[in-house]
Length: 196
Image 1: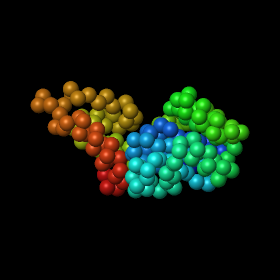
Image 2: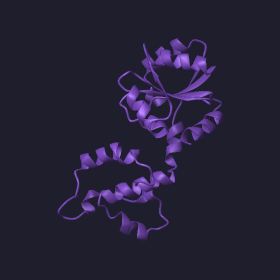
Image 3: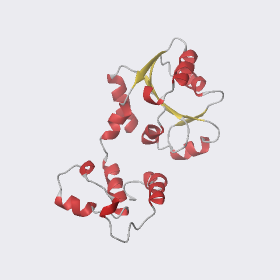
Image 4: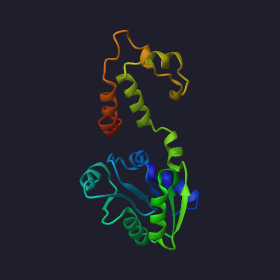
């Protein structure tokens, strides 16, 4: 569903494909939580491109085709673009170093490489029902005053809630913030909305 939304956005930008480098965007689109990788989104297929250390993890976390790159990301991307007959491909310019861009440009030859900015972030701004449920659950876990605020502000956007640790009881938070962030990253983010 998220990739379909991205494909519509790519169509409006007149792009045939997009190379995703930002790990938050990769996670948002695919569910992959590894430390390194690229995502190639095309109209026919989407690929998670990782090295051998992450192939099993990628296969377990995502339904996309997993590509174990040998050599370099740019070589793997070029082969996939050839396979999909793509000649005009976007890339996340904010998350791509000049060296990565230069290497990719050389590898792709005559293929057109178009810089993009904020394409996926724009999609991420609109929260899905399951995301809203997870946000509410995280706020509950954080022992915040969210419930009272929500009752007092039923029409307000959730982003307007001012979360502050100092609003909690004088005995302090009932959790370790580092553990909470880890739980959010490794547990809650993988749960379905129904399970939460």
